Length: 131
Image (cartoon, rainbow, N blue to C red; front, side, top):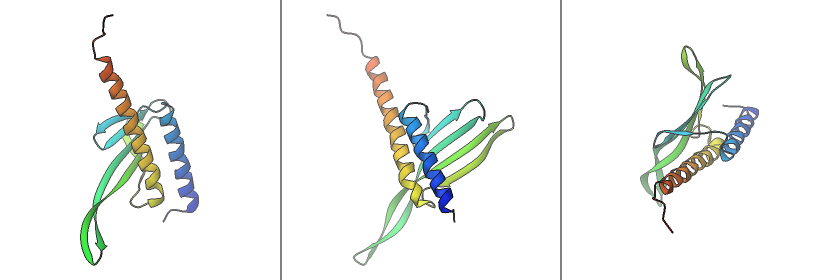
């Protein structure tokens, strides 16, 4: 089990990544519909990945058992070198529930920012109206 100091440090790191994303300092790209990635150039070169996952959980309500989908997020950091990517850190909100809300907020921020950029592009494809 991670220490409280480790959890706090990861929470602070996610806050900083979220703020940098909000300030457009991090340009996430879509790897697939449930995964966003950022390639950091320079030293150290790195790749950050945030993926939305889900699993089935059994829920009992009023004596009935049913399956429900539970969403959680996987955050990974790779060091990029001449030998290729090397996974340096990986954690998910299913195991570290205290981080899942922050990962969810970051994922939604990235998704929203991408949608806004895509809508701006869509609008730019319209022909100009003549007066």
